[in-house]
Image (cartoon, rainbow, N blue to C red):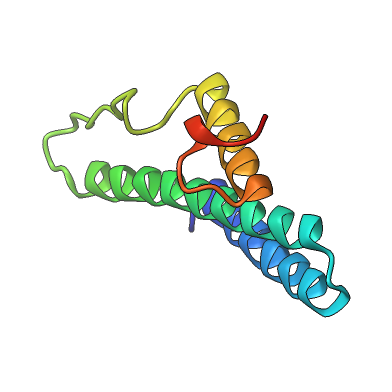
Length: 104
């Protein structure tokens, strides 16, 4: 059974594709940027779910009863994930390559 983050991430990614396509059809640059940001957010969440799935599979395969720990650097705390989403949205909204140089 896939991790909930994988399911939600895939849904956000698909929703972002729909938003981006709607923005292209209507010529709405902001909607296109939001769609791209949603896609990135979904891909990140999907990747986090993939790591969780991988660790769950490895733990299930261990015969000694011990478990692998999920390193904090792999599954970011909620605040770090929110900061990443903010920077991703900002980058997409301004069409910048580097968030540090974006916007006003």
